[in-house]
Length: 178
Image (cartoon, rainbow, N blue to C red):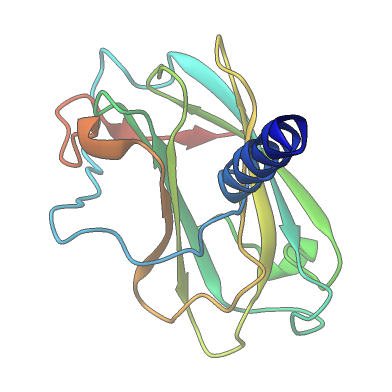
């Protein structure tokens, strides 16, 4: 009797810990940023172009065949370092076509581990990103999963920085793209 009770408790604890571990891997849905989120598009000579980032944006197979939507990107770390890349779109080069992957080399201020990313869509086509992966200098690659329609004319994405993020930053700048 005691052995079966101990065995049952062991199985119960194993099940509970497995469910808790699985819950931590469930991705959150994208959402608008808090009202304090600001894009700082001012140029800073100290930070401009000091680190390079590779950003890979995959477009969903549920997206329109092509888009004329204007797409911008902002990402950063928990210490207020922000990279802003306006107008990634270019319909002449077939950017953001359905089921495609587009790679951008973006230069901006150096960051610690990237923990937030927002996309901005302006237009009527209804572009649908699948995911966005950011590779940066001295940081681990991070992927943000969307696969939902981004509302028009608002920043929309993820903030996994927790309570440490400074959403208005003096060390942000507009990124240069090559």
